[in-house]
Amino acid sequence: MTITQLNYVLAVAEHQNFTKAAEHSFVTQPTLSMQIQKLEDELSVKIFDRSKKPIALTEVGKKIVAQAKNIVNESDRITDIVDQEKGFIGGEYRIGIIPTIMPTLLPMFLKTFIQNYPKVQLKIKELTTPEIIKQLNDGQLDAALAATPLDDDNLIERPLYYEPFVGYIPENHRLSDHKNIDVADLSLDDILLLEDGHCFRDGIINLCSASKNNTPKKFQLESGSFETLTKLANEGLGMTLLPYLHSKQLVHADEGNLKHFNDPKPAREVSLLYHKNELKIQITNALKETIDAVIRGAIAFHNVNIISPKKNHTL
Image (cartoon, rainbow, N blue to C red; front, top):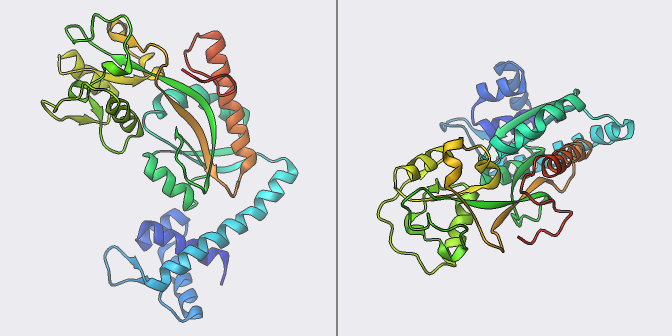
């Protein structure tokens, strides 16, 4: 039994296809299949049920994969210890970012990070929060950027900033004449929401549940794009809420439709997440330091209205 064989098993378990697993592992499909067959012969069990499409794990295969993840992670820790001892910050680093953070935060820090740490090969995925939690626990991601708290005992959450919600309210809406708005003004009846799977959507629903203005919706529409939601609001189909950084990206003609909340302002906590095994922690620390510096700069020099976790974050 070798670490290489276990990595091949994990690749097939993830992709449920020998060809895709081989491509992911940068070997030929016959090589990967032969090594897995050798492992199965050594253990005298079948790890995969090849008669099913897609390929499925056998019952004993599920237990083997669970243990293989632990073994591979521990073997990676040896390399990690050596890298930390040498002060080396490099190698592959896989980050997951939720869709409502990707377009605003990533451009703020990516160029600086890759310039400061040219030996790190970043692999960045846009994923929903449930996908991020699963892939962090499965060892498919090294870190993630998401809204927290997530209350997963296996994950460490390090807050980066607190981002207020902003109302996008076009003319002729019932709240358009308000200078500022309150949470009590919100109603799910006229709020356009992101599609299911976005934690920002869940935050809005939780806010509205505290309001007494909720009535049955006249129509149901969910989108994965803030741009779509603001355009529909402009057509008189309701209002929406935006994270503060998204509101800064609106075209000039739409900026007048923004309404800020009175205190206490609703906000989301945005954090850097990683598994408690702390593999590649030197890269994780470098990433957090880079983002912290960018956030401090944005607050100080560009009057960006987000709150550093080092300050009082009551909004």
